[in-house]
Length: 129
Length: 129
Length: 129
Length: 129
Image (tube, rainbow over all chains, first blue to last red):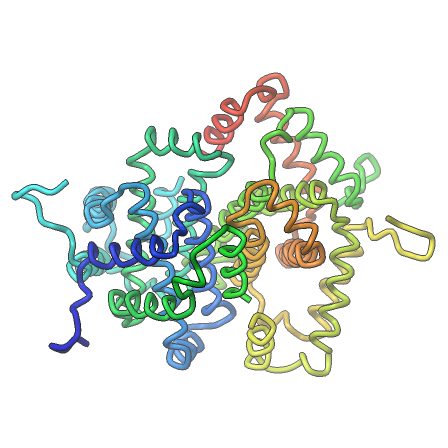
């Protein structure tokens, strides 16, 4: 996907800095607070979900093929708000996600988690309760 | 935040690989499809939003201070689903987000976007409509 | 479902009045504004959705049978916020819904709407766009 | 709001029957299952929330005045899915909501619930946990 003339786009820090710069160039920070940022994130997640509504697995595949750029853009919009929110709340999202994975690894040990669907949904439901 | 013994946690690719490995070690891919992944993303975004509900700016600040780890974990959960979904849909999330920022830069040129709140919400509403 | 000693519970007005009284008896109106009410509605809708996540049609049926009261309660929670919000925004929800059905009947005429799934999702997508 | 030539629009049953008839006239039941219905409900709740995003109390008031019909329609859309879902899951929404109010009255007794904001959010958070 990458060639020599393109940047790698692999750095979370760089992506986040660019997002913050985009916002600050427009002087929009004054309108931002955690509640409205979280609403933005949720609304973008809704728009992403809308792509898959009413569709079975085959129909989703077909839809994604036909609407690849739109789906890509929605996921990017979600990412935008995740990184902006992380910035404003002073959360290092890389550390936070790696550290959450460690917690989840303890919560769902491989030997307990591997297996059938029932086990899966029950595990998830226990973890939610 | 970082010291020499810790990894930088700045690579999107590494974070994503670890997330996919976490899922595949547990053999959970069989239960995953875009609709349910998008639901997961949305449910985590809801849980994040719940932290800020009913609170004004001061109360949010206080809440975030007292519940720093919980908020951090929720944002990490959102990130988990974003990166897993990007993987399954074969979307390079780094490229996608940089490329969406370029589109947004054209859609909201700095000179048009800078300014008062009314302008901001109207711009956003136009873009949604 | 109804017997002579029970009220019919068919009146929107009575249900709404009881909801408003519940809130006002607790002096909670002071904390309510449209944004946080809409967040409440959305969070309850999320909790309802969570019941069906990861499940296929058969698993949903089984889940609903086993968790009938919980599902019922979630839907009631959604209803609570719909009617409270209607009250605070001075919307007659009965009129509003009947009138929206009239609009939708024009938007989706029976002869155009009847038919296969593709037609359905396309109709919906056109209406969203 | 009501005059002699208009129906009262107060009956939940009548409203629900009309909604079910609207759906069945179009032969759309075949595409409906609890998960996608719950997604629809959630997406409409998102669209409602979107009206209040980025706005403070004054701005919301102004927005609602200017966009009264749009807000009304969104709330009606939410109501549509609540009643359709209640029908399909065989839940008597009137009974369900009255009965949930009884539970909530025990959970939040007036003497414990009346009072300051802190008490309110803490009560809510306890109830969520």
